[in-house]
Image 1 (cartoon, one colour):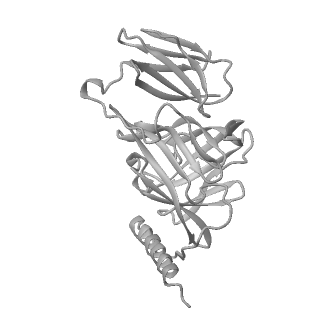
Image 2: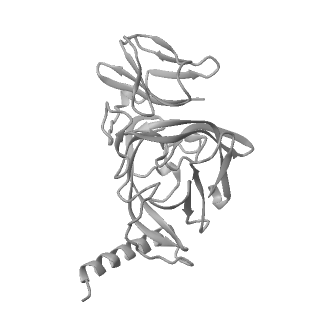
Image 3: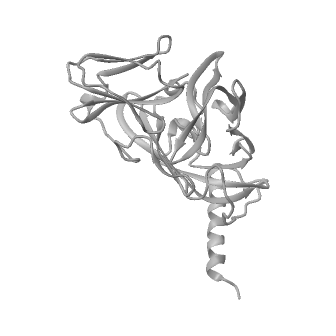
Length: 321
């Protein structure tokens, strides 16, 4: 006897997959089949969710991007995870739905403009190794960004010891090399943004840009919040008077000093947490300027918040090599 309910679900999934690809402008040469997820998946299992914070150039607003893995489909013979973005980052110039598949410790991303898969992450890369991410850049010209492994450590997330690659992204734009640092965590991905392509950030686009992961959850690792002081979908809207923050932060790599300076005489508190959400430093309070020696911090990504009257007035991240 035919199970009409099951058949209907598969048909809906197939139609949704085809619509995704039509919106992205790619239908030719693809074999699409909706497949029920059953086996274990190292990266992006069904139901996995990421929340990333995003901010805006020339504005003090804070928003978030949610990415959820909600289906699997077959593309060109590869079983892919369907990643849907909610509140997508416009300046990232990527579609609302992405497709990835894993092969061992490597993750491959389907680029609908190149009509091919390319390397996204290499979780087992060794120190001083690198890989290249290829994508279609401005004016439909093939572009690339190189990812170099500067150091390697381990992060404990809910009892899971995950390999952390502390990397430098390098991108050549008009004969100038733009670089930025981040951390790529096994099974979770880049801790600034999953698709962290633009090494020169808001210099490319004066719009929204990612500033770091808020939360992650799946059935294997569980739920983890990198900043327990706020919700995963934390949003703030600035007034015109507060569009430009009076507080500035600078990390001096040459002497491992973190310097926070305020243009106003306010009594503030400084908090520093690591990528596991653990508090490493809390200031007793300061007004104009505060300096922290972080030479004893291990290599990795850190999150800084400055509070004034229980209100967050600065939230930034930095990478210590």
